[in-house]
Length: 75
Image 1 (cartoon, rainbow, N blue to C red):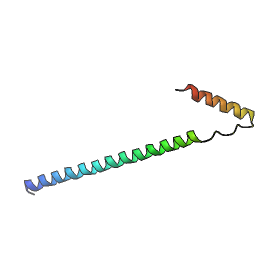
Image 2 (image 1 turned 45 degrees about the vertical axis):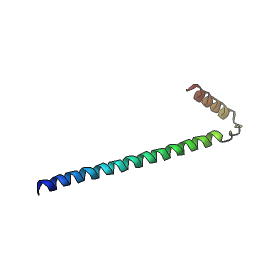
Image 3 (image 1 turned 60 degrees about the vertical axis):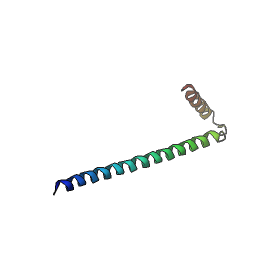
Image 4 (image 1 turned 90 degrees about the horizontal axis):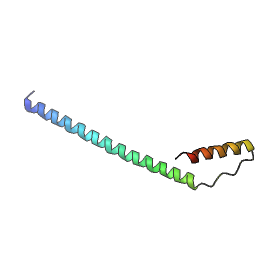
């Protein structure tokens, strides 16, 4: 192979690799934004959901209250 052919092959390989990495980067970035938007929508839906009715089971109510207190204390 001639020197010019080797150089052309190296340049085309570098360009191809660079384009491939660029496409993968932007595809991952777009996928991450979509996942973040989905998580935000789900969190918003959970916040807007009506509260569950209080349980008739006294022990269960106590556990739920303790869990709520734990989550309220954590910043």
